[in-house]
Image (cartoon, rainbow, N blue to C red; front, side, top):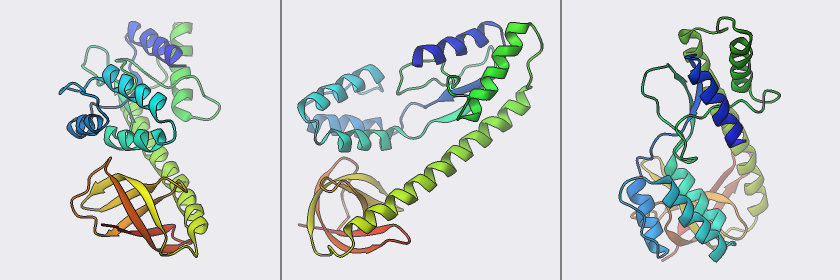
Length: 235
């Protein structure tokens, strides 16, 4: 799939056709990823390196498959979200950091993802020798719209999962769990409990923790309708 999407991106670029690209920018929190890797005995380069990051993750997957999903989630959080952007021939363009490729698009799933339909239309017009079906301004609007819609769909999916998790823990207030911090910002601190594997917010004792830290938490309360799970950090 990656090879196919890269080939389509390369084909459109070779024809000088503006097109949608799927990009994941160089992570701003690479320094924290380096720190996290160091706690697992791996020294990553000080400058972002996708190949080195992949090697570290594969090593951890083999060494500790049970806890790997939590480590992987922490890294994904620090990498940030992908987005759609427009590549204009001759102008510099961000690549996809996580895949370690420069030119990448979405083209292989037009039955379920609208950006793929747009790309397929561009390819069809190029193969027929006709003009592109979209100008740059139209592509830029589509890129912004598709990114926004993807973010909205992800929010709905997260809400359903959060409510299901809250239902699972309902009535278990006071229990203590091991977890890994998956988010830490002025907006709040979040932890993923290892068993059962659910996410919640640390509302007490969260000061000083960062993404990737291992902590113990006590369940304070749940709210199924809103999908809230609140924890306090244990000493």
